[in-house]
Every structure is written in C-alpha cells, then in structure tokens.
Image (cartoon, rainbow, N blue to C red; front, side, top):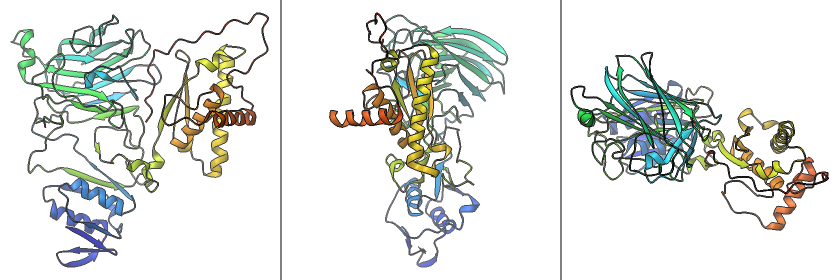
Length: 493
C-alpha cells in the first residue's frame, strides 16, 4: 500500500524522494476524505525506509511513519469528538491536576480531580445556547468527610452555593441530591455568557469534582419532565493516561439521563507531554443522545465524514508549537509503551509523581516545630538534587530537576519529576524511613541490601534515619502511630 525503500517513495510504479511532504500527498490519495495539515518546516524531512502492507486507519499509518522518521514529528487528531450531535459548547478547568478514586462502582463518580495546593477548582462552561438549564455537579472523596462546596454564577448573577453530604451511605449509585451531587435549577444563560462553577474544599480539606450534567429546561414542562427536553451534556473528570481505574469511561444515566448508552465527554487532567494540567480545556462537547458504540461507550465516526490530522515538529523541537502545551481536549494517539522507549523523544519529557508519608519520620525528630520540619525537608531536597547533579553532571536541565511540595495537614511529601529523579527521591526517603518506596510499585530489595543502602546514604549525607535516637528527654513520651492520612494524594504512574 505504501512503500519507502532507501529513501525513495514508490508510488504508482514511480519513484520520488521520500520527503514527508511527498509521503503525506500519498496518504491523501489513499484517504481521500481526510484532511492532513503538515507544518511547513517538516516538508523536507526524509524518511529512510517503510513498508505498510495494509492498514484500515490513517492513524496507524501516521504512527508507523512517525516511528520510521525517528520520532522527528508528532501528530494528533484535531477533532476530539465526531458525529451529528457535536455542539459548540466547551469548558475550561483550572487548578485540578490531581486525580484519585473513592472506590465507587460508577466509573464517573469513582474518579475525582483535585488541586495539589488545597485551593479551589474553577470550571468555565462556554458557548451554551441561550436557554434555561439545570446543572448537576458530582464529587466526593473516599471518606465520609470528603465532600465539597459548589458555587455557580452565570452572566454576573450568583446562584448561591450547595454542598454534597458527609453522612455515611454516600458511596452508592442510588443517586441522591445533596449526597453524591448538587443541583442548580433554572439557571438562565444568554448568548455568549459563560457559566462559572467554583469548587471549594469541604470538610476533608480538598475541592473535588467527578462529573457534570447540563440539562436544558423545557420551561413549559413540569420539573419531572425536564430530562425529556432532549438537550443533555454529560462530562466526567478523569485521568485517561492513568491505570488503576482512573481512566475508566462511563456511559448511561446518572442522577438524570436518557438511555443506557448516554455518551459522556471526558475531561482528562493529563497533558500530551506526560504532565498534569494546571489548566485544560475540552471543546465541541457531544450531546448525551449522540451516536455511541454500545460496547465501548465511545462515539462512532459517521461514514465519509472528514477529519483533520495535524503533523507538527517533535516534542524536543524548539519550533514545536505544542512543546509546552497545557491544553487538553484532543486525542493524542501515542500508544502505551512508546513512552518508555529509549529512542522515543517523548520519554525525556515524561514527568510522574510520587507521594511519601512522612508522619513516622517526622514524629522521631527531637523538635517537632515547623522550623525543624522545614529544615529536615530542605535537607532531603538538597540531598536528592546533589545526587542528581553528581549522576548527570553538567547535563542537568530544569526539566530534569524534581519539584517538592509538602502538605503539613496530611504530612505528605509530593515529589514530581522525571522517573530517574523520582527514583533518587524514593531511595533517599526510603533510607530515612526504613521503607524502599512509597505507595507500592516494584519489588523490594533484600533486607541486607536495603539496610546497607540506607546506611550508606545516611552516612554520606549526614541525615538522621528513622529510629536514630535524639538526645533523650528526662521522661520520653511513648510514640503512638500517626493516624492514616484522609486527604487524597497523586496516583503514581
């Protein structure tokens, strides 16, 4: 179907130079309904060898071409949704980079997003047609106290604040207003007005959001018939790049709905470069009544409908407009496993998170005031950075350095950075606390090896290991195990 031999493109029995521009022209001939946009600086990029015997999807051909080029470009499908039920409605999400699960059996309600800094989440809904709407907002952490407060405003008018429940029994799919979700009724939207939802921390200390339903109100109908008006948009907030259930997709009804195949748009906190989005967006939301594949809950693409595919410079290219993109809402088609390839330039851009429970170690400090805690955490940070510098020398860039954030309320230390930096942090904290890591992931070394490694790190960097005795007070108080943290932490990837 498509053949490149020693830098020559074989096409209709003739040979031409296998530049990316020529190869894309050949793909346009094969997929006549597809629109392929090629960045001008990629036109003369040469592809040495490639043979595609058969493929039904343009995406498969583009991915094979990307690999054959040595990962010198990236591509994406620019339309996130397809079908006759696309709308012009979009949303933006600010300050919701964290993702966690509350264990619910419902895929939408089970995953929630939250801020790392304990602040508020802001969701703006744009381009809603002028009408009256009801808004259903879902969210709850894994504990009874893990509720949130939601405020809604439209066109400068506030519709007040509502709070989800804190009593036992919230973790059920028998939906109850004021328990798993809140409802703002009869919200009037005029053309061009955004609707702003502000999520505030609840009793658990974090603002969380799991789902959103926007239902147009049939103003002449009773409240019980509002969902029959036909205009319903469903959105779930999740982490599509994560495993462990945080990427599960929902279909069907929640507190309201139309059929068991209702489509749910998915806002993911994951950026295209492996980052966690502080600000993201989702465009052209699809109505719940759209054409949906029952087996997957994903939208079907109508036959003959054209789609736009964008080819841009690779992730490491300074000219790449997507290099530091922080906008979600597009289908990035990098497949699982490619990110770990040594040849893949995306690997160097990947950042992950690791969470360490520092309660046990901090409880053994001779002084437990904030100055002593901060000094100890700065020692840990300096140790990790010193080891990283000694391993990489002058090759350390700002992107190689991890970021540290300590949450005093939960006594959790969150470290985000490239996998090699996270591994160093894991070993340093493990040497202090007597644990090889935090939150699982990988096998533990043999006890003798662990002890030797801990002793070497502690001796080399002058740190105080867990269990090292400080100067004994006259009457030492018994050490009680600290309570398990109730607040969410970032899911390791």
